[in-house]
Length: 136
Image 1 (cartoon, rainbow, N blue to C red):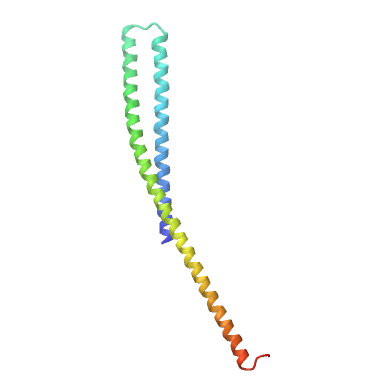
Image 2: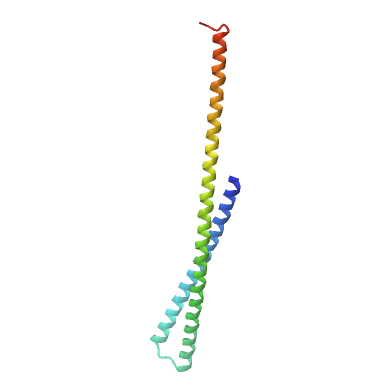
């Protein structure tokens, strides 16, 4: 049962890693797009541009802003997923640690019981020696 809990925890940990990688990719894409839009803005305000070219640059800027908004929405969804997976991971980790503690307690009880039996056997042997002609 402990092995099963460990495997479940590891699977959820891998899923969490994937979600975080996806989140990082989206954040990088947002930053890249923001940087591009800033350079586009610098081009718009830095030069004297004719109307048609200016209109095209403004359309590109508008599309870029919409793209950033869609990425932010996706980032929000990924963040919610990350929270859920993290919660699941922490729950499975807690479950595994509880099982490990139970296993350790069981082993300790088993060890104490074996010691008790050994002491009882040693006492019986000593008692027999004492009653049936052992050294006095």
